[in-house]
Image (tube, rainbow, N blue to C red; front, side):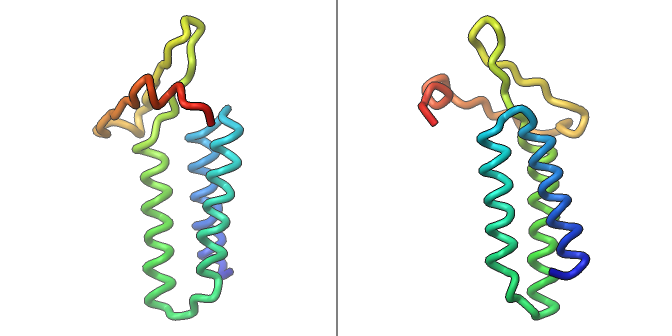
Length: 104
């Protein structure tokens, strides 16, 4: 991997670690998915393709950071969402209780 690809890889991983902090399953699965996507494209050498892939990864990092908010189970048995400043302007989509109760 080139230096820029490594930097972008780390940026995406940092975004997932911050967004999914405290959720071991999502941390593990998101890191695995990021690694998988970068590995799938390790062979790409075309400057145009590399540029496109790196831009897509940057966009993914931005999306993860600004469009995903992890709901936390509170002591009353409900879920709370606490958006931060980076989420200003994002649309909140609340999953149904049915979806939240599905076993993982």
